[in-house]
Amino acid sequence: MCRHAAWLGAERSLASLIDEPEHGLLKQSYAPRRQRHGMVNADGYGMGWYVPGRPEPVRYRRSVPIWTDANLPGLAAVARSTCLLAAVRSATVGMPVEESATAPFADRTWLLSHNGRVARDAVADLCDAAESTCDAAWVAGAVFQRGRAGAGLGEALAEVVVQAGEKDPAARLNLLASDGTTLAATVWGDTLFHHRFHDGVLVASEPLDDLPGWQAVPERSLLTVTRDDVRVQPL
Ligand code: GLN
Image 1 (spheres, rainbow, N blue to C red):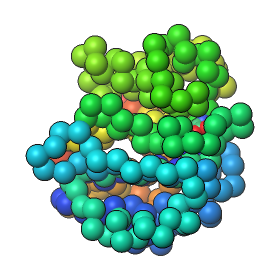
Image 2 (image 1 turned 180 degrees about the vertical axis):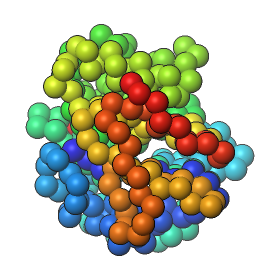
Image 3 (image 1 turned 90 degrees about the horizontal axis):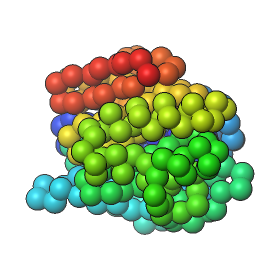
Image 4 (image 1 turned 90 degrees about the vertical axis):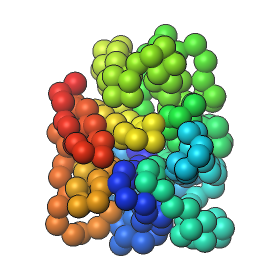
């Protein structure tokens, strides 16, 4: 299982997801506290963020452990946005360790991360092409394909998770996605939390700190976050 996190609200730095909080993604890469599968997330990491005047997100992905990238702390401290998404990866057995298998996956304005695993033939039918042979890349391809056909972010996530989950009942499909103005996330086999602040909302596989306010999102649900609303719907 990988770990992912996102923020939507007033402008913040990527460091607010990664190395500022006590249990940010940097710490979660070697000492996650709620992870049900895998012990460390050392097979790469990535982040995406939106900047004014450019609808597509800026993206930075590496296939090395996050703690080995000496360039990261400086970049994370100055990269600021109203919408941030980042992930650390523990590759599922049999999956390639390469940049193109590392979240966040991106297409047009959308970003996507997958915590979990799914049989590739359960998603291969749902998608024409993917960037990598990694299962997560196929999941991303299926979601992006629905987006290009006109589906909304939450709608595309829900459709892919329910269809892939039917074909592979053992699948774990916690997805986290954004289009720059909305965050959408599914809970299907692993943990997910959200935390509301006066100026925005954090969403994360597990709490980034021990401060009060983190709320678990129930299993088999879709979380949708906009600037004015947090909604949880059953899947
Ligand atoms: N199955 C995906 C991969 O191999 C996600 C891994 C995970 O959640 N640990 O990258």
